[in-house]
Length: 285
Image 1: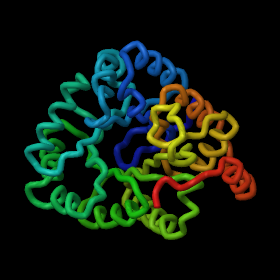
Image 2 (image 1 turned 180 degrees about the horizontal axis):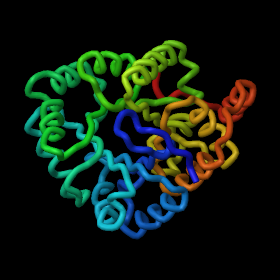
Image 3 (image 1 turned 120 degrees about the horizontal axis):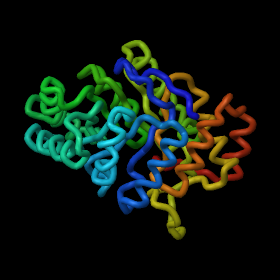
Image 4 (image 1 turned 135 degrees about the vertical axis):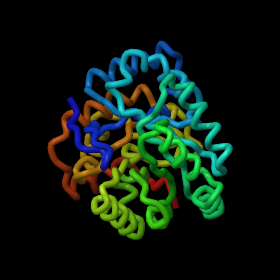
């Protein structure tokens, strides 16, 4: 079973490995239900999905009649204006077959212009606050990608007291000293204010860069269990963070198995040697 910890100030204990439901974007219901069995096997009790993840919300919907109380359910809206975001929030509730979600996140809030629209009066944040006041969502978070997202998240946290953040974090991304400094600043802010820190791209190896794409991830992932163990254990070696699982159903059991066996963070020597062996390349430059 995978260890749990408090998800920010939500009052809920979430497994440190959160199911990244992008893996269900193109899945059949039968494939999704098999994934559910894997989640239950490892005790995973937190789902992270998004309106933009293909059919993922539709695949999760049938689970809710039996397992709604078991799962902390988070979704995301990529809309930037109030009316569009409000419509998407209600659509997500219908697709998920629930009357509320535990967390609504403003998705990929990285572009400066979109950032300003979403967080200004009449923006998506207003729709999220309204939904929270109506009991349709429990908390409000932000997500994003890229080398500037940690710095952008800091700006977002200065603008509004978000309940959670989601951003890349891995041994490979940590080789960028500026990004690492900004990530540390975000993590420090969240620890001080009781916000949850979710991390993504733990097993990203490099961009596909012309190689034949063999998995549903937009990047080339690590595939061997030993390599996945190292990458997952390195992330979980940072106290307090959560690891959102890979967007590929075939690799999901390996990531969860690694998380269930976590004891301590690999050494710098182990990770440096592994990164060289992987011929790892940063996803974001």
